Amino acid sequence: MILKKSLFFLFLSIASFVFSQENIIVDVKIKGIKKIKESFIQNLIHTKKGTALDSIAIEKDIVFLKRLPAVSHAYYQVFQSQDHLYKVYIHIEENFTLIPEVNLWTTTNSQFSYKLGLYDYNFLGRNITFGGFYQNNGFDSYGINFKAPNLFSRKWGIALNHQNWKSEEPLYFGNKTANYLYNNTSFEVLGLYQINLKNQFNFGVNFFNEKYQYLSGVTDASIPQNLDLDKTLFKLVYTYNDLDYYYQYVSGFKSVLYTQFVTSSTAFQNDFLIAWNDFFYYKRIKEKGNWANRLRFGLASNENTPFAPFALDNNINLRGVGILVDRGTGVLLWNTEYRYTVVDKKWLAIQTNVFTDFGSWRNPGGKFNDFFKSKNIKAYSGIGLRFISKKIYNATFRIDYGFRVSNNPGQSKGGLVFGIGQYF
Image (cartoon, rainbow, N blue to C red; front, side, top):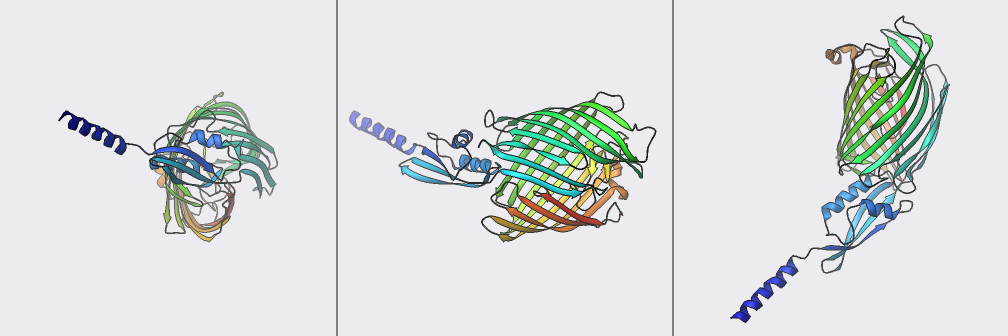
């Protein structure tokens, strides 16, 4: 009887051990990489040798990798080595990430302008962005940028930026305009913290100097013709990112909240707050369609000043409206477009798109009902083309033509807008 009981408990113990064994990863191999350092990838992913096989964790690693600028596409395979022992192969298709930047345009005063830059979005093979630009629009500008999201770990990184920017900008006094030479010299330090795959904070400080020099147009006794301001900007950015990428197609939801507090060294401009939130929603429609949306709402301290922070510009928010045609202390904006792929090769995709851009602004010193006044509401629709390299990071050349559809005569009946990268 005792022998039977002992054999029974021995059988239960063996069965419990066999059936409770986890599937274990015995090897993780990264395939297809050229410039990216394998050690960098191995340190970042959660899928590691000696851990339990978890398909959900691997899928999260794949989403994380596809968001890296150096990665065009990523997928994985699992092979059984022995009973409960598995090998995981992660396949990566790399982007070319050393990207020159060349822009040519003319300003409103027919000044021929150009911008030349060079950026590496995978510097040292470690997901570091490093580069700079030189711009001449009648004035000399330059910038140097360094961003290492994973410099210290998967969660912690840093960004350093320096810029000396000069441009001729219009300031608005009611229905009248004055042109000023604007010069901004800044030094910025940001900490980058990724809580998890979907949530991230950027925070830091920007020390900058602003100079305004009167050039032409109307004058106002309350507005000096020359300003020299030292300012400090405290920045906090929170990003929720649940986007999934498949080459040129995007699906999911993303939200980015920007908050800034600016202090000034002069009594002419008060300290002010500015905050805005961008909501993005993308949906893939059948095999070749992609519906894309951006909703923005933003407010700033409501000073009655021509230096209001929210600009109305076809390169930023309403395609076809014109270049820097107005300013406000609040913005309500919706961009929506349908993208359809007409050519899809291994290295190139071409998309057509139809879009509508709708926006409204709060006037400097105005009220919330400014958003609903017809003179502040503008809507533009149009069509466009996208030429997309599937092997070069952010190499999307876009051209859109937007035309006015609102009753408000606005500033422009429409026009062409060129750019690099998707509009949003």
